[in-house]
Length: 618
Figure 1 (cartoon, rainbow, N blue to C red):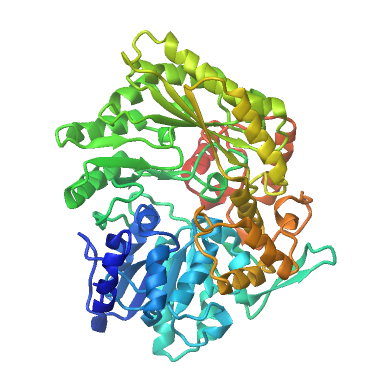
Figure 2 (cartoon, rainbow, N blue to C red):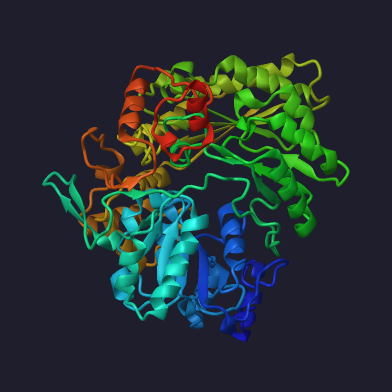
């Protein structure tokens, strides 16, 4: 519900629908009848945030509790932000139109390191002090969760508490504690100290960090009774965990405009560069009955005619063909298409293809990640070239003629031979198309090769590895360009500048807070967007703050170094990650979790694929 002041501005902005609220299935409550108001802030545009499954789940779950009202807040785009500042309109929530300063909790989901400046900018737009120490009352509690919370140190001075792991249970526990503390007239500091005792809650102000002369961390010391290690929270029973039966249906087209159904969490594979594959362990699946029931409810309540089955690797669902058969029993009649994103190269079979033929053939996407078999072994991708070509053959015979292939450059041990193997693999896919007798008639093949730059991430076997320099990455991008000699292959690549800053923030420590505050002061935001990003300006800030960003991005760490995130426990042991890093240098692969339990540590949760595998061997 927008105010009259906001309404006057809407004709002057590019997409007014981003800022109005009033969508189908939004939740509006009487603010006089709720105890806790929670502003769920997505630090990016409406179109990006409204596509995010985690926000959909928690928004609905919070609002299912009578005394909580959760509202949505998105970062306004440049045109709207300019008008809001000019007209003294603070950042507001879409459901009520109230400024976020009126809320008890201001919660951010951290999906991408380059959204950190948007977090601070949104606080500023809401007239909320950016530093945690300057918010002294028991209100406007700034919380954050999501994958980037696994190393929140670069923004630790601004966040009151981080949620570590999955939020469905821990978030509500913290909200209930807040209600209790407020009723007992406890201070914000007392609330934070009590919150730190809840498993999955990290309160950065309760930890002191000391540094060695060489800039590495000497010690992280808890105080006021805070735990030495913060353990992640995990949902083990996927069938009975809260899942919404409807979503807010957006007014404008969003990035992923369809119903989304989660089918499992975690990943069995263990690709050594992939943070999600480690921090979400162990794999926990939903039953076919639960998925089928939830898919039907979503389609009935939203009107969507496409359901995307969401997970880190959809074809790794243990009963994928059986699941698709069940969904097809009603989806074909209802004219609902079922899509399987994040397919593995070795997971696209004739059976699966026949079940998803209702999906519009816009193209298939696979991620070999590396061009050569040697480098795929280094990163533990466990995909062979003949498997990729066979998969493409199946797809081409099934009517597809567009394939996207995703790769990384700058991976540990990579040589120029590995780089050249990327376009060569693209050419092999083109060749495979012309071998297919049943390929689409009167259509050429289009292969899109995309490369992103390797960014070393916390809680992966490559967390100790240096990132390639900008010069090295550009050299590799140019090598791929000059090796492609056909119009049937399109080459896209990710900007090396943003990858560098992402690496700085991903492995940064608290000393970066100074640079973050300076960036906020200078109005930095939307660093993940080319319209706004400037590495040159960031380098000026680092220089001004006496920070060497290469210390974080381009430096190899020793295995015995204390890392900024070592006091966080995501269930995978450091010993296992070191072992995997050493295996990478030996070009040795590790079997996936369904083949063998490799003692990563996640079996301690006593559930999921790894634990079940262990039990069957006893």
